[in-house]
Each structure stands twice: as C-alpha cells, then as structure tokens.
Length: 360
Ligand code: NAP
Ligand code: ZN
Ligand code: ZN
Image (tube, rainbow, N blue to C red; front, side, top):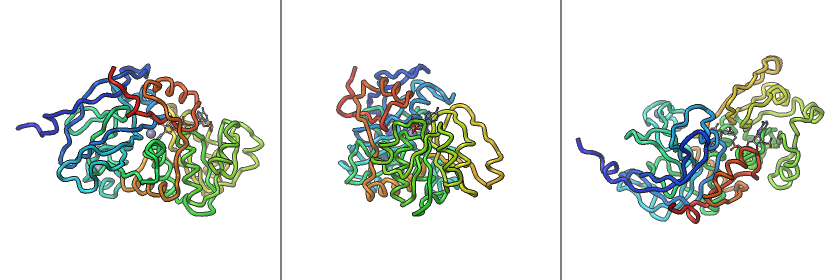
C-alpha cells in the first residue's frame, strides 16, 4: 500500500524545541506533512507562551517526550488549503489552540467536546495518526485539519489574540458550563497570570461582578483600573479573606502551583463551586468540611471544544477583549520561560515568530 501524499512530501519546518528536562529551548529542524485534502496550512506570525509550555518543557507532569516543541496559542495567515477545505482560503487570519485531532466518533466528539475525547491529538507532545510526533507553534508554520482551525475576528490583532486560543477558551468554557456567566453573579478568579487576567475580562464581559484573589498585592491597582475587576483580595491576608467569606457564586482557580484550598472554599456561598483549571504538579489537599457544611463543589475543566473556541473568540471580538501581552523575539524564549516561572510577566508573553525566527 502506498503512502498518503502528505507523508510522501513532507515540508521542511523550523522551530525551537527542548531536548531534555532542563527545558532549555534551541533551534530545531523538522518536517510537517504536506497539505492534505482537508488541511489548512498557515504561516505562524505569533505564539503565546502558556505556563503549560513550561510544565511540558521541564517534564514537570512526567509525560513529556523529547524533542518537545511547545506552543498552543498560535496565530497566522493561511498559505495553502487542501482541495476539500470549505471554510478557509489563502490569506485568512487563523489560529490553532491546544488540539489538532480527535477520533470524531465518540460521544465527546459528537457533542463537540473533542477536548474530552480519549483519543484527542494535542498540538504538541502527541502522536499524529501517522505515528509522527506533533510539534507546536514555536515554529515557522502549522498544518492542521480545518476542523481545528479557528478564524480570528478582523478587529483582534493577531499578537494579542493568540493567548485567547488557550488562556481564553480554558476560562471561557468553565464560566459557561458551570453557569458563572449570568449578569450580577459574583465570580472569583484565583491567580492573576495568563489565564487569570483573561478570565477577569471574560467574566466582566458576561456582566458578572469579579473578585481577584492573588498572592501579589502589586497587581491590585492594575486588576481594578485596567482589567476591570471589582475587588481584589490578597490571599495571604487573613483579615481580607475573612471579610469576604461566603460572598462568591463561583471561583475559577488558575494557580499553577500547590496552594491551600480551604480559604478559597470558604469564600464561596453555599452551593458555590470552585473550578480548577490550573494544573499544579503536586496534588492539593482537599479539606471536606467546607464542602459538607455548605454543599460546595470542586470541579475541573480542560480547554474547550473547537466549536466553543470559535464562539469564545467571536465573543472576544464582539466585546473587544484582548489579553495584555509582552511581545518578545524568538531568541528571548528561554529568558521568557525563566521569567514566567517567577511570575514576572504582565500577563502573557507572545513570541514574535515571523519577524524573529531565523535559521541557525
Ligand atoms: P501563569 O501566567 O504563570 O499564572 C499563574 C498565576 O498563579 C500566577 O500569575 C500567580 O498569580 C499564581 N501563582 C503562581 N504560583 C503560585 C503559588 N505558589 N501560590 C499561589 N498562587 C500562585 O500561568 P498560566 O499560563 O495562567 O497557567 C496557569 C495554570 O493553568 C498552569 O498550571 C497551566 O498548566 C494550567 N493550564 C490549564 C489548562 C486547562 O485546560 N485546564 C489550560 C492552560 C493552562 P498571583 O500573582 O495573582 O498570585
Ligand atoms: Zn495553554
Ligand atoms: Zn472522540
């Protein structure tokens, strides 16, 4: 049996990859498949640096495969489309988030939550159906089935739109699914980083009343004046936390490291829910009394399906929601990772891929 044309004619690609758990990235040459019938190929202009990229580059979750080429907040412009592609044409402004494939037959896929498909193919550190490894957006171009391509609204700049493809959908989806999108509801956002600051903007656009819960008092003024939060609690300040007990309908917890849940659970009203989207390496301690006495709930949520991702970015376009970004050149990526590990970014690094990625 002959090979599919896309396997026979791989296209050269260039990116930055980590080769071991030091997580240090360096230029890396590889190839991507030729454009298949249902594929969209695009030149990558920008790629956000998600904290998951850092967890993966350093093998903090224990399932990284090297070489590992991160990046799942990818935007760019279409350069080629396959013969059966219906929705996109050359020149379109598009993006790819965390997923590039799934089984398309299971209940999850049929219900447009490919993000919960057991056979999902992630944008990097996964296996394509042909057995090759997926490589992410810290690279010059991307190719994906059109089902996994997102159209970027015309009014959103491609650099600031990039983080919406992970940080945006990861916070939008639980706000919607857990019913925390109703005007007047009181929503808490824990951790004001890449995910957290987008969560604040989305929750405000839904008309909710937003409280940021942060370890960084220095972020207070900006959270309120620039991001639009209604109030700000310093989680290490017991008086502030005490005064806010029982005030929130729900919380989106975006924290990337181990932290105490009890003080957060007590911020919830009875029947309130906390949704974990941050993915700390170590398990968190779960105190059950605050759950029992207030019928409170702890849940989790992973990114979102492709239909909802398009819905989210269209919503962001309509409400002019753009993440606060620091655009950096490709060869700054290791410094950016170090700064991200220290929480030294407001609030998302975005790599200026097209202008700064050069062959070594
Ligand atoms: P980030 O930009 O580094 O933000 C995380 C924030 O958490 C920090 O800005 C900080 O906010 C707070 N924080 C950090 N260390 C802390 C500690 N020890 N105790 C308490 N708070 C701490 O990261 P991100 O890109 O937003 O990602 C956050 C997490 O979500 C990561 O674990 C990432 O892997 C995960 N993630 C999950 C999904 C999903 O589908 N569920 C998708 C994307 C990312 P303050 O300074 O305000 O305290
Ligand atoms: Zn991410
Ligand atoms: Zn499936």
